[in-house]
Image (cartoon, rainbow, N blue to C red; front, side):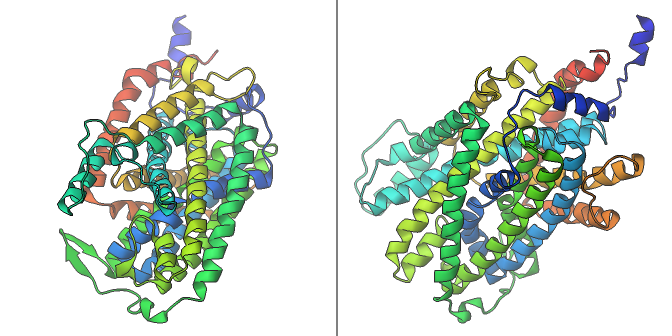
Length: 499
């Protein structure tokens, strides 16, 4: 007995043996139904949404002006370095868990836990933000049909009272209310939760349909909007820098800050890697889908940004629905209906893939003993999905979206993801040095260069986030370290190597 105790590695840097991943794949109860293009569609479904329909207005109006296109290129380049590293990892370790699983087998348990903890920010809080954005576009759609629901049913309590006060100040009569919730956000989360519990095949089919709709509309925006571009709106392309509230807007620094903000629009590509456990041929198809979805979405983002800032002066861009409002401003009111419906569909698929990714990360962590297996690793006998954790995620996201004012959460999501991407770039390089003979169906080209640039680019964007975002991230990270030492380290499977 004493010999067995001594053989257990209690270091926080202990690594999960790569052989254990092969055993996990063989024991997986998930349905392998996702094809190469099904995975690519999931990636596009996670990426195309809030970036096009929401963040373009905020980032161009307040931070970058027409130079937002350079911000998208900057963020896309940082993601590309990470995506190339992700692709190599996905070909070696085609299991659910994404960056968490990759780090556990290469860098060590404490780093893997920290990345997994940060992915909660990316997926769960990202889904919450998207749910609130979905509600905003749904309300806009109702208004197009002259339906005006009460404020207290469309907004969280804080926002509802703020809007009521503004309307009263403008001379409008607004009834008093004591209760308020964002009912559309609450309900759409439960619709998505139902689809996810029902099965990956149903979720993928729903996503594929939505992706076709929103990509078609994005192409429509690019083609039709191109005829209404006024090149004068691109001058100056990089507006002169100004200081507001102690922070530089516009100029080069403003452009970099905008890149940090719109980075949130890209982070869905790594959701592809969380679906490796449900891919038919994960070693080849997951790397392909990661890179393909990122390239497709980057091109679409750049073209939409050029069209949008060409149609409307950046100072006049609407902050909540910039694309729809741009077409309304030039008199194409019929197009507003199409764009608004596409935005609703697009945000639905983003929410679906984010919640899907979150439950698969939880599943990977629970299988390793770092989270309670009875809750997070429980697979439904019929649907073959992690149904308990899916319902838990749906419960948290729906309540937070319904009752909490969401402001700047996209930056908080980005902070955790930027750090995770930087760590993955370092981890894949470390594994190449430690295990040079390991089979790699996909090899990252010029890895030392790609990994170094990936680390520097992602950390640079992280450094340029707002100060209060960095503070919130430090609080979240500290909480995660506490949870690790109180629960996860003690319950890790590596404490019982014979099991």
